[in-house]
Amino acid sequence: MCFSNAEFGFIKSSTVFNLTQTTLYKPDEEIKKLDERPKADEFLKSLSFIPLIKNNLERAFYSPTLDYISVPPLKQFSGTDEYYSTLFHEIIHSTGHSSRLNRFKPSDYKGSENYSFEELVAEIGSSFLCSMCGINNTLDNSASYINSWLHPLQDDEKLIIKASTQAKNAVNFLLNKTDEVKKVA
Image (cartoon, rainbow, N blue to C red; front, side, top):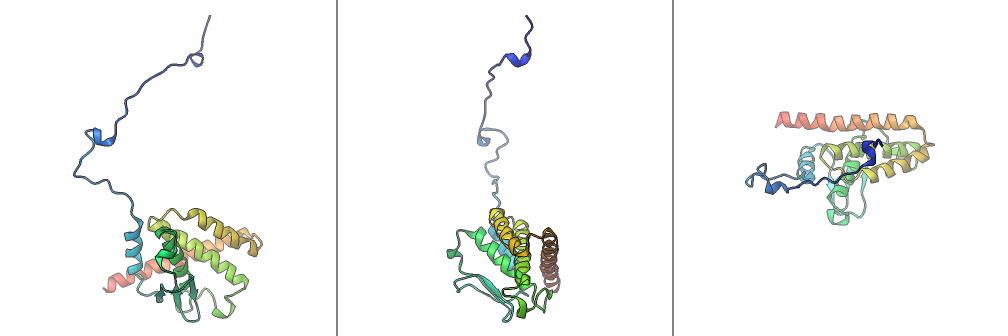
């Protein structure tokens, strides 16, 4: 009688150790966990050229006519990831101002197709900045938000490409301006 290997199972035991129980562990060497906040804070400090950020209002928005950003205090968010994601979203909006990338006009901002497109740009740009700063816990919320703005734009897939390009331009603008500020300092 011939048996293939697949017909016989076997049990094998393995000994597993915690890293602290091995010679690889060095107690004086800290295993560093990725901490998003210092990276995000460092990035925000470099953005001295963006408009004033007010943290005492109830909702997050960017005012293109007055050129300022409003974001509620951190305690009103479910965590720092959500706070930074929202703040980055509004910062991306601010890059569309006529004194920066001139992406939109305040007169046609609210309630127009441009508004939906701008929301896509801001959310995609925010996702780029979050990724750059090591904030990865907001991807599901960003995907839902982006999807909600696609419907008003009749699910035109080309708009995602255009919005992604505009978001990339906004992020590059922020990074290039940050480099300019660093060179002057």
